[in-house]
Image (cartoon, rainbow, N blue to C red; front, side, top):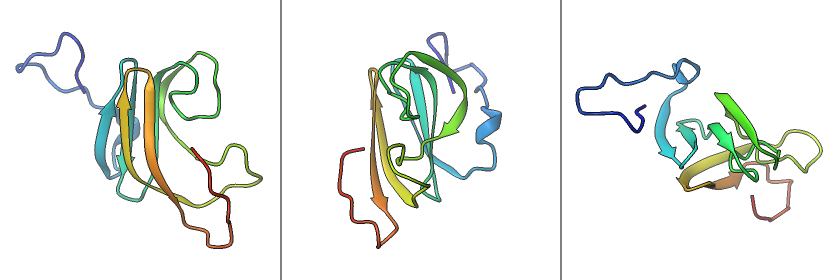
Length: 110
């Protein structure tokens, strides 16, 4: 990972919490980041404004360690989901997520 002072000679900053998680893609917003894993997990960290990290809170919060996004905050119990793709821009994060539970028929916006 780099920052505003990163040059071509800079050493990358390794995020220990993402090691051995099979990260296949990283996206960057203005103040937050997200990492997509090969098994369909999405981890976010940074500053959250109005829920930009997708962690179930809409108030300002700083998250220093990548934390898994669940996509089922309003449902009873944990649901099996698979994140296919993620994007970030400004203070927003978007994700394309599919429901892996055939018995669950809710269609909504995440």
